[in-house]
Amino acid sequence: MKKKNVGTLLLFLILGWLAGAWIAKLLQPIEALSFLTKSTVLKWSPQADLDIITYDITIQLKLCLLSLAGIITAVWLYRKV
Image (cartoon, rainbow, N blue to C red):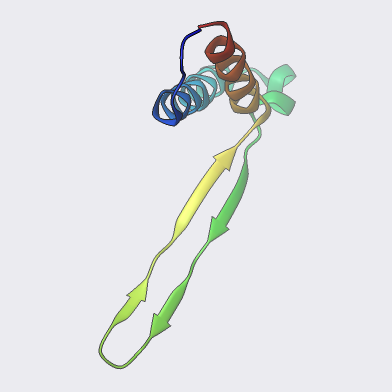
């Protein structure tokens, strides 16, 4: 039995998300598929001012149905490997 590691899973997830996002970008001009390509933005912006250290980080994730399908496909492929 092969041992699978977390790094490989993360690589599969990122590549699946990226592939889904690229397909969504290619299909954006087609109006009939707009429900698949419309993105929702998830944003997280932690910030603090602690006198000696100040930070302001913004993490923004764009998710659409095709990128979600890419993630699900990546998990399926990871389990098959």
